[in-house]
Amino acid sequence: MEGGRVEEVFILDGAQIEQGRPILRLSNATLQLSVMQREADLFREVNRLRETRVTMEQRRLSLRASLVELDYKLRQTEREYERQDEMFKADLTARQDYDEAKDNLEYLTRRRDVTVETLRQDSLFQTIQIQQLEESIDRLRLNLELIKQNKENLTIRAPITGLLSSLIAEVGESKPGGDRLGQVDVEDEFKVRAAIDEHYIARIRSGQAGSFDFAGGTFDLVIRRVYPEVIEGQFEADMEFPDGLRRGQTLQVRIALGELADAMQVPRGGFYQKTGGRWIYVLDEAGEYAVRRQIRLGRQNSQYFEVLEGLEEGETVITSMYDNFGDMERLVMQ
Image (cartoon, rainbow, N blue to C red; front, side, top):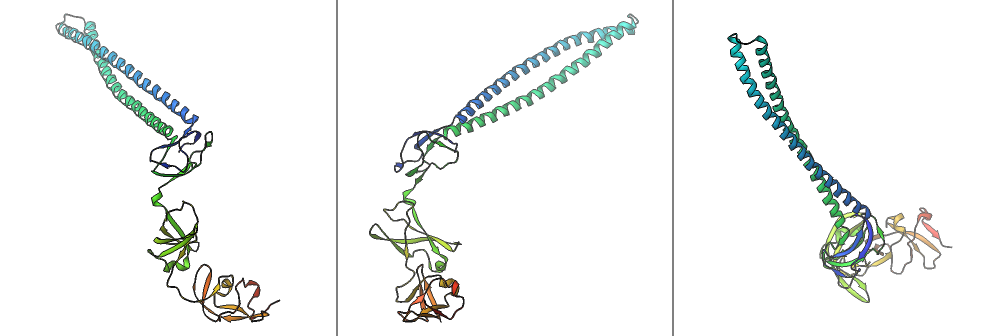
C-alpha cells in the first residue's frame, strides 16, 4: 500500500461492512506527480514513433524514386553502349566514345546495386527501430497502468465482508506506506487460542471439553485442533468461539483432563527447581525446625502438584526456593 495523507473517512470502526466498500481515501502528491510525468513520457514517445515512421517513409520513397531514375538512365546507357559496341566493331566510331559508353554503363550498374542494398538495409533498420520504439511505448504504458493502480489503491476498500473492528486513521493524518490502518474480522471464523504447558501435551486432544467464567456466567468450550509444536515450553490448541466475546479478550480456561478424584496436593513453588520433586522440607508441629523428607509426586496443573507418597494430611511444608539452603538435612526456623 502506498502511503499518503488521509483525506476522507467513509465509515467508522464497529460497523458491518461489505467486501469492496470504500473505508477511507488517501492523497499522495508524489504519486500524482509521477502519473503526470509518466503520461508526458508516453506522449513524447508516441510522437517520436509517429515522426520516425514519417521520416522513414519519406526516405523510402526518396530511395525508390532514385532507383526508378537509375533504371531509366541505365536502359538508355545500355542502348548507347550496344550502339557504340556495334559501331566500334565495324570501325565506325572512335575508341574513346566506345570506352565512355562502357564506363557509363558500369557506373550506373554499380550505382543501382548500391541503391538497392541501401533500400534493403534501410528497410531492415527501420523494422528494428520501429520495434524498439513500440516496445518502449508498451513498457511506458505498463508502468503508467501500475502507477495508476497504485493511485486507485489510495482508496482503501474492505478486503472481505465482516466487522470493521478497528480503524487507525484520522482526516489530515499522514500514513507511511505499509502502515496498518485497521482490521476487518469475519465474525463466524473467530476462535479461542489457548497456550498450554508442554507437560500436558500427551493428555490434550480434539473433542476435549473446557470451560471459563465470564460476566457472571460459565461458558463451555470444545477443543477443535491441537498444535503439537512446542515453543518456549508451551503448545497451542484452538477452541470454539462462544457468543458474546470480542476479539482480543483474555480468558482463563479450565480443561478437564480426567475424572475428578480426591488427592493430596502441595502448591507449585520454587522448591521443585532444586529437588525435582524428589524431596521437600517438612516443618514440625511447633514450627521450630524443618527436616528433609523424600516424597513422590504425581499429576500436576498450573497451581498444584499431586503428592503420592511421603506426606501426611495437615503437614506444613516449605515450597519456596531452596537455593540458599544447600543440601542441609535440617533447617532451624528463626
